Image (cartoon, rainbow, N blue to C red; front, side, top):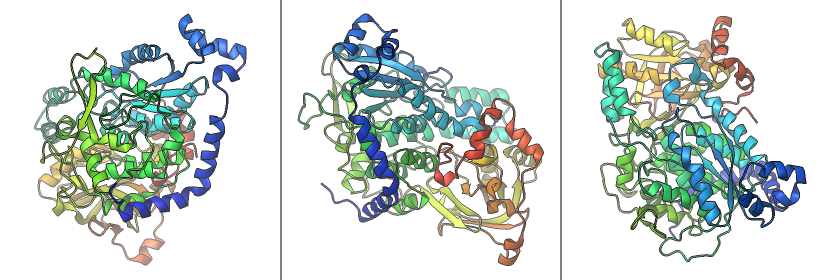
Length: 620
């Protein structure tokens, strides 16, 4: 086995020591839950009768009399999300496969799943981040029926997978496998779509032309094909060993999709199809998810995120995920890993390829194989398969007819099939990861440098302060930003308005940058994995609404964003800066951000939210 990189070991050990006071009690609770009797033996007769009243008599017999394993299915199905529409018929497939293996499966519950693409730039987007914690609670509601021996979790998109995983880790005594649905086929390229958006921002393309481009880009069931939060989710689940290996980016219409879903049932029951070179076992005791997701597993996910230039949202979400397992990580951990983890892929917005091209080049299996070979992932972690994380360095394939037995097999994902999309660790696109921590008198923030041209890594320009993304768009339309400028957008953090993504700002800022101006964005809001090529210091903590120094910035202040040095500074004399009062949100703004489209229901979440660096959690 390749020797693990010393920085990886050091970061992992620091996380382990920092987490000990919370991780040890968590594991003790998991162990205690594992010693209980099965649900149908432990619970009262009326409880059990209610639990099985809605299922076929043959399944009742298996659960109650035969004591067969009962699998919970928690699904995020709806057909508002193209990525989740394929889940409609998954429960039937899962139940059929479970029965074939002598087990049963019940849809324990559904969780809400909103589409950021639909709500982008609307008030509904202000519920997006908090939907993660609602999904976690929904997962808990489903699993709290407490009649299950294992669980399959069906979800893909931005807040859905982190929410499912947070909820799952609060039931850490159960073995669990995550089940994705795959990306839509490639349509209009992401680069072409971005160009049309920029033309629309300049008034060169009307609504009809813009809508035509968007419909050609987002055109079928499956995830969007850029490497944003949804597809980063899938990369991380592969790196954590929580999928059937290589499941992430197989398209919904592929004949292999159903075979992989059936394999998820076999896997969670410990009867997965063995890979070549892995000794077949009659039954592999899948570790409970709370034991499997340890410090090494979290670090593996972080390394995979950095190696692929993944979504900045995960600097929030995986902090929250880790905390659900009693593990404490922060942005310094990401920063230290980013210094040694190379960038191995170029997938939009970090390049021109989409996730289908990434999959064709070797996909997650290639990245995991390269990181393991370079000692930049822990190879000794627990997974849902007997062969360990090395199984995830493969891609699935089919032999013969999809209905035949034993048709699913795996092939090595190495070497890269396309060096323009995926490169080996010895010859990476960049020697360091795609994310950078920025610190200074404006607080702590992050920037996705993998998508920003090298000559834009340092921007120094006067500030223009906005209290909303709409105000910035109006200023752009009025021609007020035709100069070097650092656009400061505040009151966008979790406590202010729920921390929406500000994607609507990418086209106008890209237009300004395209005209040769030095442009940057500084905000306590989010920009996700589709932030484009404009340097953006995001997730600024503490946020302005929590007394953060962003509330001190005034129009004309000189701001320096230096992604090389890792600094973000307001170049204001220290005495003046220290004495300057903090601006506050107006009552009118709080009223506007707190009402309409259900935002009233989330007031308690805004009040209780931790900082972005603490995961923007509402349940701690």
